[in-house]
Length: 317
Image (tube, rainbow, N blue to C red; front, side, top):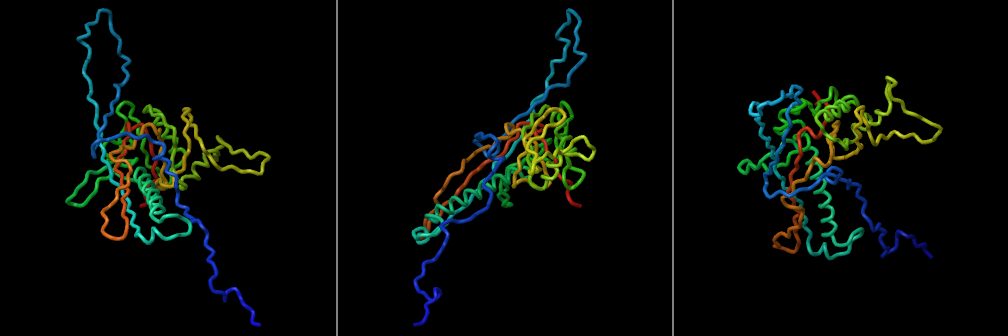
């Protein structure tokens, strides 16, 4: 009698894992930690102000006539930003949605969840990487874009010009001398933030600066030393940094950060400006399929240009 081998059988059940592996990041730290506010227009504005320099000659003689004192004032300054429309579209035909699939239920639900994550990633990257906020130019087919983080740090013109705080002269934006910011440059920006009156709580970067951050617990000059006790564990992580002025920031690594860049900020100073919250919009049905758009329209606002800091690696020649 001939031997029957497994590969000769007809009707063998397929062995397919009933799950789908997707390693795409699902953490969006900056978006998650900043506040939200409502805007009713695509262009939104806000004001900032500063006090006068301290006057050590503010001493009056008895019986001074107050009418001789300077009663002038400086008007507040206005900043503006624009919202950006972000959208993803899902299209699934009726047969695909009706059939059974491994690793998911209805295909439309699976694709909706996937596109929603992608939309969140787009928003996080826009907050952290966008340049200057821009208005829409329909004739040139240029869409509105929200202003990114760097465009609103130590600048009042969308990042075209870096300038100092009007009261103290503190400049909270720094271009590093090399490709990657150094510990000294990071601490120098934190010092400038202290001078300006900022209250930083977060230091955000990606893996390209992790070596610099980890190295802040040791120094070749001997001012800092890494301690290795009688343990089998070696910890290279630095999760908080306290500078000489007593400012303590939590280190947060973010995959969507620009390379060789450090942002130092307080989440309370940043707000997502919402014109249209994310929603699902069914599109016109002209065939045997369902089309749905996930759309949102938001901008980004920074309370004060000198409330946050940044250190950016020197651009390659």
